[in-house]
Image 1 (cartoon, rainbow, N blue to C red):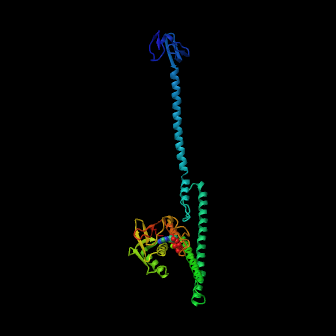
Image 2 (image 1 turned 120 degrees about the horizontal axis):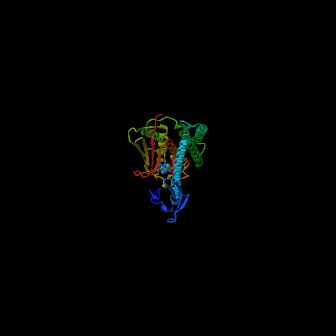
Length: 365
Ligand SMILES: Nc1ncnc2c1ncn2[C@@H]1O[C@H](COP(=O)(O)OP(=O)(O)OP(=O)(O)O)[C@@H](O)[C@H]1O
Ligand SMILES: [Mg+2]
C-alpha cells in the first residue's frame, strides 16, 4: 500500500515499490519471479493498493490443494471399501452359517440343516439340501435293513449245514476226514462272517437307541461267561482280571459296550500264543468320559500294522482261519459314532497288545 509515493505497508517478500506496475502480470527483474497482479490506484488520494501472488506460491498453493484433494479422496475411498466389506460380510453371514452346517454333515449323522432367519434367497437351497439328506438317509437305512436281513437269513442255511455235517459225523456214515473238517471250518467261517455283518448292521441302527446307566464290569463278566460258554475261552488256560472288582457305572449304550468288550477280549485270547494267557480289563472314570483298557500278554501288534488293523477284512496273517477281519472295524465304527477315541499300543505290564477305548458319557435320550 503506497500513499503519495511513500510505502505504508508491504509484505516481506513484495517487490520494490519503484519497480511496481499495474499490469496483470509483473516480472520482478531483481528476483526474476513472476507475479499475478491486481492493483487499485486512487489518483485523487494518490493511493495505490497492489496485491500480487508470486508464481512459486501460486504453484505451491495448487500443489497443496491437489494433495489435500487426494488425501480426502483416499480417505473417502478407504471408508467406502471398509463399509462395503462389512456390508458384504454381514450379507454373507447366512451363507457362511449354511456352509458351516453342510461341512458338519457326516454320513454317520445325516441330520437336516436347521437355521434361524434364513434369507428368502437361501430358503430354496436349504430345502433342497434337506430333501437330499432325507433321501440319502432313507437309502442308507434301506441298505442297513437289507444287510441286517441278508446276514440274518444266512444264519439259517449255515446252521442247517453245520447240523448236517455233525449228524453225518455222528451217524458214522462218513469218515471224519480232513476234507470233512475243511467243510466244517468253512461253514464255521461263513457263520462268523454273517455274525459280524449282522453286528455291523446293528451298530449302525443302535446309535438311535437311548443310553442307560450301565455297569461296565458286569457287562465284561457277562461277555466272559458267554465266551466260555461258546468255548472261545478255555478257563484252564486263560486268566482274566477285571478292574475295578466292584460296579463301574457309566451312561452309555449297553449293546455297543458289549460289542466293543466282546471283540477286544475275544482278540486278546484268540491271538495269544502263551501257555497261560493273561488278559486285564481296567475301567477308569475321567471328567466327562470314561476309559476301558484291555491288555494281554500275547504277541502284540507290530507298529507297522497299527494303522490298518481297524480296516474292513484286515488280518495280519491273511491265511489265519481264526477270524474274518471285521471285529476291530466294528469296534472302531462304534467309537467313531460316539465321538470317542481308540488307541492301540504295547501293554507296559503284560507286554502284549493294549487297546484303550475312551468314550464320552452319553446323554440320556
Ligand atoms: N490282541 C491282539 N493280539 C495280536 N493281534 C491282534 C490282537 N487283536 C487283533 N489282532 C490282529 O488284528 C487283526 C484284526 O482283528 P479283528 O478283530 O478286526 O479281526 P479278526 O479277529 O481277524 O476277525 P473277527 O474279529 O471278525 O473274528 C487280527 O486278524 C489280528 O491279526
Ligand atoms: Mg477279532
